[in-house]
Length: 159
Ligand code: COA
Image (tube, rainbow, N blue to C red):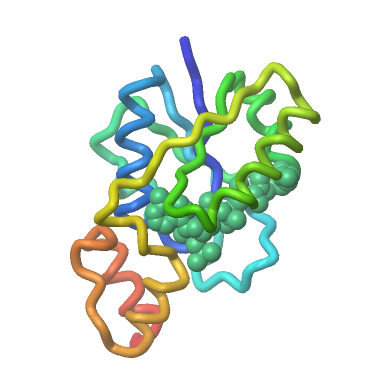
């Protein structure tokens, strides 16, 4: 069985993430979405809230599981028997950071590959921060995040 992990902060999950996930599902038998517990970023949703939202939006995807992890991504990948780390690329600006991270991960664990998938152009301008910023100022993000996620965001910002 070919297992991949799709790590990230997912604060919150967007349609861009789901696009990458959908494509990864065509390539692997199982994809584990791995929510990083540690981040340098100030998060809006707790790790638990992010995991719950991800579980909801992937409910109809039997090959997907959702988990949270601490420490090095590559150690988590080894622990769950994954051979591949999936990362999405949106624009050239993602490349430098992703390249550095992939090489560091390769150095730490040569047996695990990073596979990059290009985000569909409709979603290439989205980031979780941009989504949060739009919602917090009363704008709509319909079509850019799953409906449940937009509702959760509105609840966070406006109660
Ligand atoms: N569509 C829309 N947005 C996308 C996207 C896509 N396909 N892919 C990424 N993004 C956005 C995310 O929403 C996020 O937006 P934000 O910065 O506004 O929150 C941004 O791009 C960064 O994406 P993400 O995948 O969440 O990266 P990250 O930097 O938050 O997480 C980890 C990266 C968790 C995988 C990385 O830090 C890590 O591996 N940490 C563990 C420690 C470790 O192993 N370190 C060694 C590595 S060198």
